Amino acid sequence: MSKALDRIRIHTGDITKLDVDAIVNAANTLLLGGGGVDGAIHRAAGRELEVECRMLNGCKVGDAKITKGYKLPARHIIHTVGPVWQGGGKGEAELLASCYRSSLELAAANDCRSVAFPAISTGVYRYPKDEATGIAVGTVSMVIEEKAMPETVIFCCFDEQTAQLYLRAVAALRKG
Image (cartoon, rainbow, N blue to C red; front, side, top):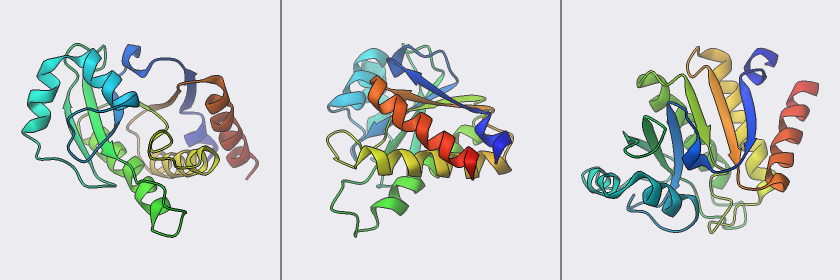
């Protein structure tokens, strides 16, 4: 597990500015932009992104789809739809883990060496950040432990408080 954890980075800042092979968008099921990181990615990528997204016919919760990066430094945008928090008894944890697995599978299939994730479902979908970060780090580390690609996974955090949650989740996995 430690080799996988060595491939994980924590970054605080704007995901739309990262020069990586793919950024992950915490999208809605329509894939047509919205608030939070979804809206920021759509605005930064430009109108062409919406045109391509319309051709994808949406995305199910827990799944992922890929588009070009357009005006972003990233070559690709992987759109995944996280679950809305409903108290934890409606399969939210598995759906959230599926977002990370599906996104990493698409990244590998598209030769993405570096991928950046936002904190999926922790904004307007109200998933508790501490639980979401544990699922994110645990799922990503398990997937990349078994795969060579992507080589680097970045958790891009909007604020320092969220970055600290990710750092603690990585540290907890290191301790075993």
